[in-house]
Structures are given as C-alpha cells and as structure tokens.
Amino acid sequence: MPRPLLALAFVPTLALVSAPARAADAPAAPVADAALPSSALLERVAPAVVSVKLVLRGDEHEFTHEAVGAVVDPSGLVVLANDHLGSDDQKASDVKVTFGNDPKEHEAVVVARDSVLGWGWLQVLGLSGPVAAVDLSKDAAPSLGLDLRSLWRVGRGFDFAPVVSRHYVSARVEKPRAMWVASGDTVPLGMPLFDGAGAVVGLTASQESSEGDEDGTSSSTFLLPIADARRSLEQAKKRVPDAVEKAKASKDAGKSEPEAPKEPAPAGMDGGAAPGAGK
Image (cartoon, rainbow, N blue to C red):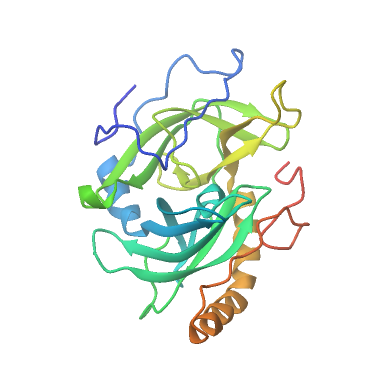
C-alpha cells in the first residue's frame, strides 16, 4: 500500500476505520494509481482544509481541543466531525478557524450538529470575501476497489502542513444506512474523500451499529454518500443567519456564544436526517 506523502505518528483528531470488510466484497489489492497526481490534488484542495481550535467546557473541567475541517461553501461554512464539538456533558465555545499556515485565527460559530449522520457545521465570521471551498455539487459514487485520497493537516507545532493519505473502498454496508468502508491509511473523521479525478465521493463519519454488541452500542467510521452530505449541508445553510445573529447578540452582551442543539433531530431540523437516509 502506498504511504502518505508525510509519515506521522498518531494524531488524536483522526479515527481508524475499525469495521471489518466482508471477505466477498474486499478487493485483493488497491487499484492502480489515481489519474490525478497527489501533488495536484493537494494544490487544489489544501486551501479549503482548515484547522479548528475550540474550548470544551463541562461542569467540572475545561480544555482546548483541536480538529481539522473542510470549507464546503465559499461563504466560510465548514464541516467537521460532530464528535469534535463535545459530548452530552460538554459545550463548545471560543471556536477559532485557521486557514493554511496563516497564524491569524478567525472567529466561528457552531451552526448545526447533525447527530444522525455525524457531522458538525461551523460558520467562519468576519471574512472579507469568498474563500476556497470543496465542491460537493458533483455526483461521484464509490465502488468496490476504488482508489481514494483524503487531505488533512498536522498541528500548529508542525506549521499546519497539509497531508495526503491513500485509501480504497473495501466493502459496502446497508445497515443502518447505505455507506462504505474505506481501508488503507488512517481515515480522517468528518472529512471528504476524493476519487482519482479529484471529485468528492462522500464524507467520512462515525456511525452507530443498528444492533450494538454485548457491551452496548458500537460505532465505527464509514464513508457516507455525497447525497447525504449535500442534504446535511443545505439544512446547515438555512441555519447560518440565525446562528450568526445569536453569536453577535451574545458577544454584544459579553457572553459566550450559544451552542447548537446536539440531540437527535427529525429530518429537516438541525441539519439532521431521518434514520436510513442515503438508502
């Protein structure tokens, strides 16, 4: 298996794909090298891959958390893994977004949390104009054996360097919804995966098992179809004006910005989708 452009130790913001591929579905080996060179993909996509820093506050603790996200709209709308925005007993605040290796931190607000599909949405504030964004409008579909790549960034101490990782589709899963297993290099959670032509085939997300195991509900990282990502994106866009207005009001009042609801929501609310979406 080809190695990523930069060999690194484990990064906390990444999650391994732990769901096993079915023997009948798994290809014997990854397909041939992609048509678009990794250097070209990096040059095209890296400007839209951002670093996120936020504070997670609980009843008895507070700590700074760092993650990686992708700008998916030129207005500055960012997608990342919902898990990065805190759990039931935590609240995300003081959200900052960094573009490339520019040290300037831009304030951002939590717009929506799609607890069903596993994505969180942020809106960067105070931008002077459109910014580079990943295009989710094209219909590119995964298939068994398809060669994939992802982009993410290392931390501040390593100049936020962009990294290209290699993956391949090793299985299709039908429950709890239609999705795919991406094997190979470590998969960045909540990020787009690209095919050989550089088109987005879907976004990765943590998904809970439809049945669970003896110790309770289990979860793994999967590649969800681009159609699911677009639906969640459109719902998040609808919530941007209200989220930005609330953030402004909270700032004027000297309070921390409000957090978007993180409990499961019915279809069409909080960027959520009904169970089984994407089938």
